[in-house]
Image: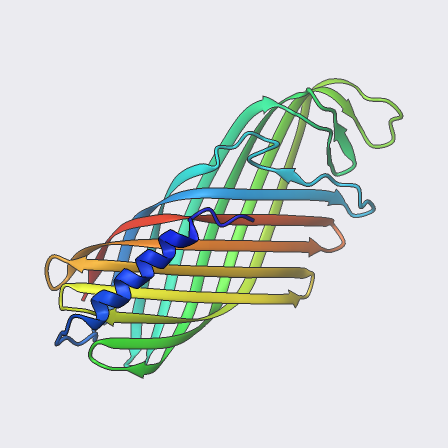
Length: 282
C-alpha cells in the first residue's frame, strides 16, 4: 500500500527535530505516572478485502477506494493512554474507531461467497472498524531527558463490512445472472496480531518533547497469517506542567489472511497522515 507522505517531508521533519535536540539543553525528569492523549487523525487510507466461501478460491479482491468509491481521506477520533507500573515499565492502550460508507455502481464483477454481483449493479456499502492497540513497554535506557524502550503487544482489528446491491446477480448454482433488488452480505474479520517495536521520548526543554516509534511483525498464528508495519514521529508542547498539545506524522500498513473452516478472507489496511491531539500528564 502506498506511503503518501513524501519522503523529503519526513526527512526535513526528522532533521529539524534532531537539530533542536542537539542545540538545546534542558533540566527535566520524565517521571509522570499517567499520560493521556485525545486527538484526531487526518489520514489517507488505502484498504481492500476479499471474502471467499470455504469451498472456493474465486473471490474478488475489492478495493474500498477504487471499487466501492470510499473517500481515501478520512478523519477519526482516537484516545491513547499509558500508565507507569514501575520506573522502567509502562502499559499503553490506544483505541481508534472508524466508520466509512459509499453508494455507487460497480465497475467490475464482484464475487462474495460464490455470489457474483455483475458490473453495473447499484450498491450501498458501509464499513465499521475498531482498533485496539495494547502494548507493554520496557525502558532499557532512562535518563532525566531521554527514555528508550522496547515494546511487545497486541494489535486487534475488528472489521465489519455490509454490502447491499440491486442489479444482475448470479447466485451459487445458477448458470446465468438474474435481476435481484435485495442482495445483502455482511462480512466480519477479527485480526488479533502480536506486534513488537522500539520507541524513544526526548525532553528538549520542560515545555517541549519529541517522540518516535517503530514497530513491525510478520507472523503466522493458528488460522491467521499477517504482517504489520508502523512508524510515528512527533512533538509535543506543554502549556503547563500537565497540559499540552502535539502533532505527529504516522504510517501504518497491515495485511492479514484468515483461513478457517468457515471462510477464506483477507484484509489489507493502510493509512498515513497527521495526528493532532491534546495531551495530559501527571
